[in-house]
Figure 1 (tube, one colour):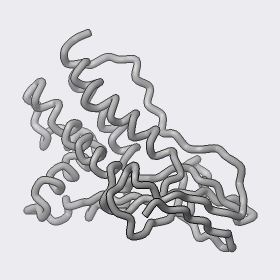
Figure 2 (cartoon, rainbow, N blue to C red):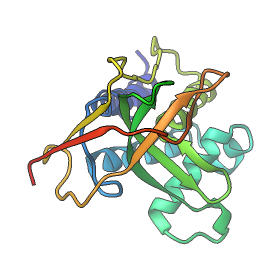
Figure 3 (cartoon, one colour):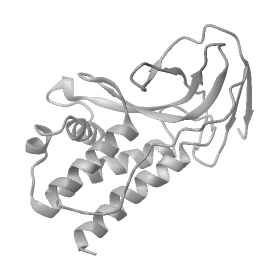
Length: 207
């Protein structure tokens, strides 16, 4: 295996897959500061800079070819600098527990979703954006692997109860959590909707 492929797998594929698995557990996460955000930050920087470190490809040129890569590049710069010269490029990450709603207003836990809140492009699923950016980077670098990324969503039974656990395993402090209620649209994509019903909420905590 070429050195470039090893670097791609080590710095992008493995962290993405690890994060994908971790997000599938029904943990109640502090929205802005937790281990998932930290991993996503590192993954963002790796995706942005790998083309430059291997083939001297400039991020500003690659951003013109791929919107997901452009967003990842904007996120990396926002993480590093905070305020950017072009405010429309600024963005940040947050985590919310995502629950799918059925027609009876019952819910089931899908995953914890990391969202990119981008000043220009709005709310974007980080895992989808990172996946698409990584595939784009692999193509630009002519890196060939058997990686077939698929975002994991739980497929448990719908119920009228939400159960989550605030764990110390992936966060130092817990001050609250964010929810997203979603439903599949006609295009097979999850979109945010209102619950339009009542469910029982059960939170267990290690804090």
